[in-house]
Image 1 (cartoon, one colour):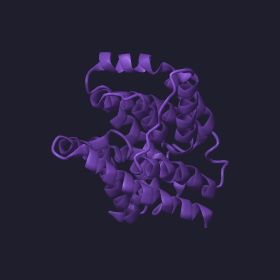
Image 2 (cartoon, helix red, strand yellow; image 1 turned 90 degrees about the vertical axis):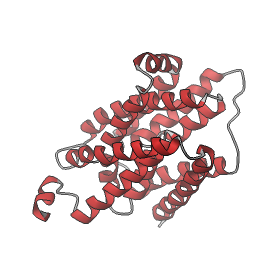
Image 3 (tube, helix red, strand yellow; image 1 turned 180 degrees about the vertical axis):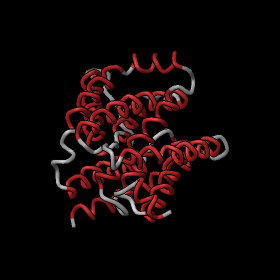
Length: 259
């Protein structure tokens, strides 16, 4: 059995694979409750048990499948309307993602950990302190473009583009159901480009693609569990607990990057 797993996942020993499955299940559950944070949880915790590049590869296909499902939950018409409404954010973000994805294998691993940990910890701390982004009425196009670019740049490096997106949607006072759908559309579009970009960059290749594909299963199971909890548990309280966990995990990434 061990040899068979080594053949399927040559870069992933059995204990590491088991840990990856549990981490993905947890991350999917968080996503099912709040609509985001799956890549943040996966990348942050993966870095403790595997190479950051392999961890990034493991995130890509689960993110793609779960985000497409989330975007289409209210049907393709609603998803299309969300795509049109946020076309500037999506356009700039996708362009930034395509550019930054090709730099993953050039940057030192310590820098990659810091580029994930610093913005995630910053975002989590601000949200826990009760700060929300307030947008001025003038120049919203520029603000949308800047935040879209930041989100895409982070996404290309790490598969994590949630913090700027959530901050922007929160600042717009987007209704709960609409925000879940819009997040699915934005993250789904980014995930499609991420797949293509990292097939080119070499992060997704014969050794890593099966590993990412298998993690789709625990991701979907986790999302189903989280969606059930979403209807029964106070979302605001659970989201605060999630942000607290993310803050601790992100600060650990910063510590490892600095060391």
